[in-house]
Amino acid sequence: MKKTILFIFLSTGFSFGQSALKSTIDQQASSIENKVIEWRRDFHQHPELGNQEVRTAKIVADHLRSLGMEVEEGVAVTGVVGILKGGKPGPTVALRADMDALPVTERNNLPFKSTVVAEYNGQQTGVMHACGHDTHVAILMGVAEVLSKVKADVKGTVKFIFQPAEEGVFEPGLTSWGAKQMVEEGVMKDVSAIFGLHINSQTEVGTIKYRSGPAMAAVDNLNIEVNGRQAHGASPWSSIDPIVTASQIVMGLQTIMSRNVNITENPAIVTVGAIHGGIRHNIIPENVEMIGTIRTYSDSQQVLIHKRIREISEGIAQSAGARAVVTIDEIYPATVNDEDLTSKMAATLNQVAGEHNVEYHNPITGAEDFSFFQKEVPGLFIFLGGMPKGVDPVTAPSHHTPDFHIDESGFLLGVRTLSYLAIDFLEMEN
Image 1: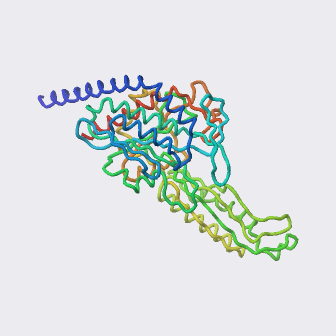
Image 2: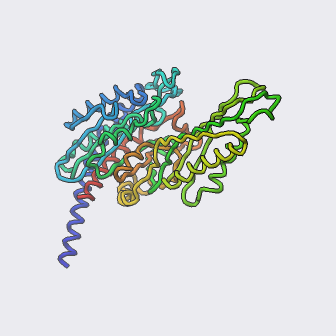
Image 3: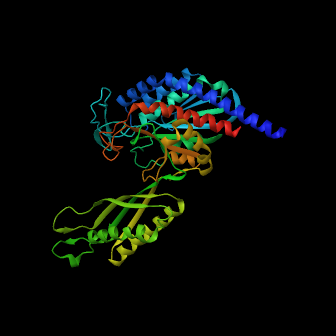
C-alpha cells in the first residue's frame, strides 16, 4: 500500500511540475507571438535560395547568442546550430527548422511580398518562400526564446538546428547538402531524438497532423537514355526507332505499380516527367532521353522498383534492337516517424492542440530531407495547419506555387508544440 501511495504521489508531482512549466511556456509563447510574426514577415520579404541563406543565418545566430546559447555557424555551408543547456541533467533533444526559399516569383499582394530576383539553373527568376520555411525559422526562433526563459527547469539539453538547402541546390556533381551534410558534419552527435514540423497551406489553422511509420516518400531521380539508329522519317525500316521504344518503356513502367508492388503495404510512384528526342519532323533521331521521379516508402520497396525499372527498360530496348541506359540518383530517403517515439508523444500533441484538433494523415508522396536526421536517431515530423478557417483545402493555394499563403494565427501553436515536445521528451527520458 505504501508503494502504491508513493507512486501516486510521485506521478501527481510530475503532473503538477509539468503543468506549471507548460503554463509558463504558454505565457512566454503568447508574449512573443507578434515577434514571431514579425520575424517571419522579414524572412518572407528577404528570401534566399539553398546554401545562400547568409542573411537569414546571421539573424538566427545573433538571436541565439542574445539568449545566452552556444552557437555554431557555417554548418553545412550556411547552417546554424544553437545549444541550450538546461538547469538539470538529462539527454539531448534536437529541434529542426529549414531556412531556404524557392525559385518562384511571388504573385501575392502582401506588404511584405518578396521582390527578390536571383539566378537559378542559368535563368533569372523570382525567389519566394513558397513552402513556408520562413515560418519554420521564425517558430523555432520563438521556441528558442521561450525555452531559454525556463531553462532552469529543462531536464537536459535542447539543440536548435537551423538547416540550409532542404529544397536542394543547383550545383552539378554535388552529392551532399542540407540535412545530409549536417549529419556528415556531426550535428546529430549525442542527440537522443529529433522533432520537426512543417506548415501546411491546405490544413486548417489550429490543427496538427501526424503519422506513425512512413509519413513521406523517398525521392529518386530517374534518367533513361534510349539509343537507337537514326534514319529518314520516310524510311523507318532503316532505323531502330528510340521514340517508339521510349513510348513502350513508359507504358511498361506502369506495370510496376499495378503488378509488382504490394499496394496493401505501401503505395509507390514512377512518373516520367519529360521525354526529349529529335529535332526535325522527318528525322528519326538516334537518341531519346527520359527523366522522371520515383517515390517509395521503404528500403525493400525502393530496391524492388529500381530493379524492375532496369529490367523493363533494358528488356524492351533490347527487344527493339536498341539499348537503354538507366541512371537512378537517390535524393532523399523516406521520412519515417519512429513508432515508439510517436506513440509516446501522441499525448503531448493532443494536450497542446486539443484532441479534436489532432488528425492522423495518410502517407504523403512529397519528400523531406528531415529523413536523414531520422536515419541517425528516432524522429517525429508533424504538420501544422496554416490554412485560414473556412477555406476549402481543394482551392487553397498549394506549396511551391506563386500564390502560396499562410495564416499567421497558427504560429503560436507551432511554438507551443515544439516546446511541449522537447520538455516532455526530456522528462520521459530522465
